[in-house]
Length: 358
Length: 185
Image (cartoon, rainbow over all chains, first blue to last red; front, side, top):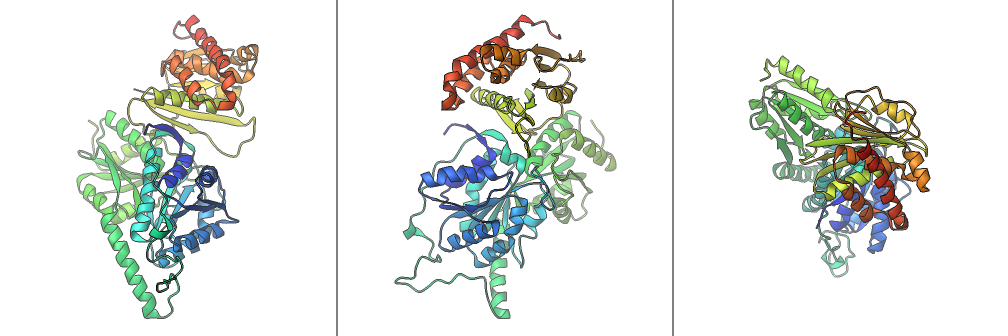
C-alpha cells in the first residue's frame, strides 16, 4: 500500500479500525477530537459501533463492559478527560480484560490548555489508578509509529488481557506526515470470542469477571497473579530505539515528539564534534531501564529531555544508579523544546563531565 | 538536504492549505516531509501558521525557530518571521497587505502583490497559491509541476471547478520570480 499524508489523530483512529476495532466509546476534547471525528464517520459505515458517551467516566465504563463481552474496544481522550477515567483503568486491570486507551496529552495541570505536553508521564507509568497495577504504555514519536503501535496495542492488550495506554502529545495528533496503513483485519466473529468472555452461558458454565475479591487471601492471590503477569510483560515487551549510540560519550533520553526533536540534536551536536547518542523509549512501561543502565557504563553523562518538569528522568536515574551524571532539561505547559535550547544543555553536561569537543 | 518553510497569515487566507499542498507535492516527489500547524483556540481572522519540513532523509524536529524560507501573508506574520529566516533563505511577502520592505540584505525577498493579483483573477482566496508558486520557484524545494499535480490529486471534489483558475494563479506567481531573478532584492 502506498504512503499517504495522514494527520496523526485520523491515523490513530484508522489504524485502530484496521486492527479490527469493534467499538469505540468516547467524549470529545481538544487536541484529540479528530480521533472521534474519524471514528464517527468510519465505524458506522463499516457496521461497527461508534458511541459518543455523556462523559469520560461513562466512556471508560462502556469500554469495560464491551471488553468483558469479548469485543475489541478502545476509548480516547486528552489529559483532563483521562484523569476522569482512572477508576475504570483500575477495574479493567483487576478484571483482566483487554482494552486500549489513547491519551493525546495537553498542557496541565488542571484544565490547562490544548498545547502539546508530556505532563501525564507519572500518571500513565506510575499512577494509572488505585491499587497495584501497571498499564503497558506505548509512546510514538511520529505518525507511522503511531499507526504501528496502535495495532500493537490491541495485540498486547489481548495477549496479556490487560489495559494498554497509547500516549502522544498534542502535536503528534495535529501534525501530518506520509505514512502507510496496514491492511484491514476482519472483525472477529462472535463465535471466536475468547473463552473467558461473557457471551451468554448457554450450554456452558457461567464465566465470572469481577474486580471485587472479598477476603485478604483472596485478594492477595489475585495480586500475585497480576504481578506475575507484569513481570512477564517486563521480560518480553520492552521497546526502544537508539540513534548513534555505538560510540557515544553523551546520551540523550527522550520520548515522543521531543524524542524526534533530539534526533536533530544528535545530528547537530555531532557536526560540532560532540559524540552524542539518543535512546528513545517506545514503551514507557515497561521502561528500557536495563539498556539505559548498560549505556550508562559507556557514556560520561546523560541528558533527559521532556515536555514536563522532569518525570521520566526519575526512571532514568533509577536505572543508572549513579553510574554517571543524569541531568534534565524540560519545558512545561505547551512549548516544545527545540534543538537550539537542548544543545547548550549538552555542552554544559559535556563541560561538567570533562569532555572535549573534537 | 533539508528545507523548512513557515507559512503564516490570518485564518482564512489559506496558510494551512498552502502548506499541505507543499507537503503533498514533497511526498509525491519521494521526499520526507512533516506538516505541523500552530493550533489552539482561534477564531476566523485569528492567526494561522504551519511549518513544513522537507528533507531527503528522516526528519527529526518538525518545528524550527529559523526556517530556510517563509511566506508571510499579513503584517503580524511579517513582523514575526522576517527576522527568523536563515541567512541565504527566501522570504515571500504578500505586498498587497504588507506595505513595509524587509531590511534584511542576507536573504532573498520576493514581493508578491498576491491579494491584488488574486482579486484580479476573480477570487482573493487564490493569494496563498500565488505565494506558494513564487516560493517553490525561488527555493526549488519541489517543482511547480509537482505542486500543480498535488492540487489536482488532492483538491476536494467540490472545488474541482477552480482547478484551472488555481493553475493560472500559480503561473502568475511563478512568473514574478522569473522576472525578478536577480538574487537578493
